[in-house]
Figure 1 (cartoon, rainbow, N blue to C red):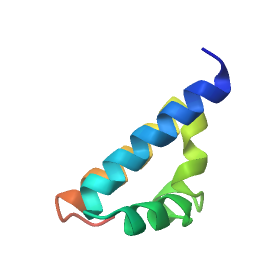
Figure 2 (cartoon, rainbow, N blue to C red):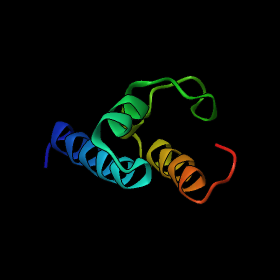
Figure 3 (cartoon, rainbow, N blue to C red):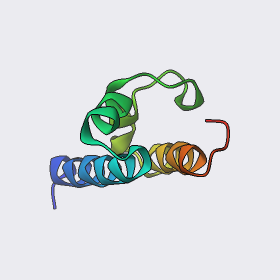
Figure 4 (cartoon, rainbow, N blue to C red):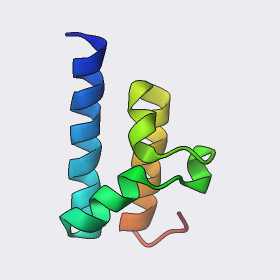
Length: 70
């Protein structure tokens, strides 16, 4: 699998998790392209290139899902 395929798969996974977290497509998409403080000012979609960064995005989404500070 190429690097681009891996990143595309990760972005799709993040989108699915974000959609589940926020309950709608528009908010999920907005989250993925908005810089986030807990990601060092990066956009969540830009974190798909690294496994560690991907896990950080998943942690942010888990925090939001469970009502914890994100």
